Amino acid sequence: MAAGHEAISRGIFEKTRDLLVELCTLSSSSGEPEGLRAVAARLSAELGRRGLACETVEERSGDGDLLPVLVACGPAAGDRSLLLVGHLDTVLPAIPPRVEGDRLVGTGALDMKAGLAMFIGALDLLAARGERAPADLTLVAVPDEEVSGVISERVIRRWSEHARAVLVLEPGEARPGGETLVAGRRGLTEWQLQVNGRAAHSGLAYWAGRSAVAAAADWCLRAQRLSVQGPGRTVNVGRLVAGTTDFVDNLGDSHAFLGTSRQRNVIADRAVAEGEVRYLSAAEGPLAIAELAALAEQIAAEHEVEAVLTTGITVPPVDPRGPGEALVRRAVELGAARGFRLEVEDDRGGISFPNYLVDTSSVPVVDGLGPVGDGMHTRDEWLDLRSLDRRIVLLADLLATL
Ligand SMILES: [Zn+2]
Image (spheres, rainbow, N blue to C red):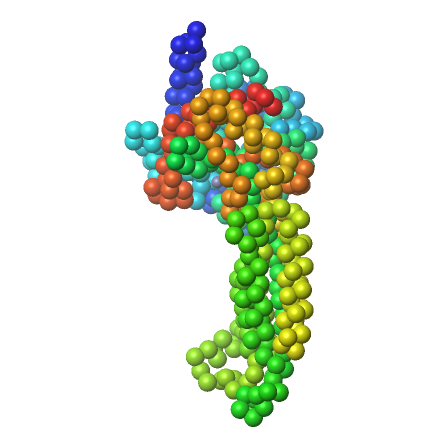
């Protein structure tokens, strides 16, 4: 009986590999609408055969193009669905894939056609075991994750509104003796500091001036030092423009001053710094911004200038100790029961699918469920095919508990 099961699993792994090779043959970089539609159609055919109702909806991208979004729903999908998320697009147009031993070298093999193929393999494995995938599952695959992400963000926000949990099929990472899942993603808040000092002639009235350059530079240094190693916040000054008001406020023309003697004899009265703070827990964002604002007040007093901090866009974090923690732990335990060691990434960099959820503080999410490899976004991108097998089993096991 056990040997029979093994043969069935092996057959499913083989079929999934074949499907993945086929998907990698279809060129679907973010700028290839026809290729994206072809991948959506190929997946729809497979998913439809497995009882999911598939629809490809055209959505308007950041560039105004119409691009396909694949939505595949289980028989009871609707309110409170189990949402699975992936993307159809790759960074590079495809070149023919090839299998080298346990590796599939192919464009988008790792990021993330394997995650999509894995889902189909997991459905087959569940069916072969006589188990059922959750009837409310919904797969959403978007076409612009690798570029503007305008559609990705909009669509994921919409579908996550009623999700009871979100599974992200992006790749995990290989580690010595194991692989990873992703629990946490930093959020960010953008900020801008404006400093106004007092201009004066640096030769005739040096001590009468109040340098906005010095004040802003002082603030920037101290702001960056508020960064904390490990899970703490990080402050990044992305740019600092400082000089006379003429220079800063007419940068388009005045950049020609650089390298010349012009206005070097002025205590500069204007500076603008811009950057962002990144953090793992929702509470940390406002705290960090409050500290940066307090620092602006302090700098204003010390340098006798005016310094005002304002904030811009905020992207919420996914807290590794948030609602997804139990779900991640369950996945790790299911892996362990099969001898598959999974480490948890509490702090993966970059803004991605989990940050787009309509409410990261209430919806459980686990990311990095897809198989591992290396060379993402390059011509050497490859996927570990044994990892694909393991992850099919993991996803099937996880779906069976949901
Ligand atoms: Zn990806």
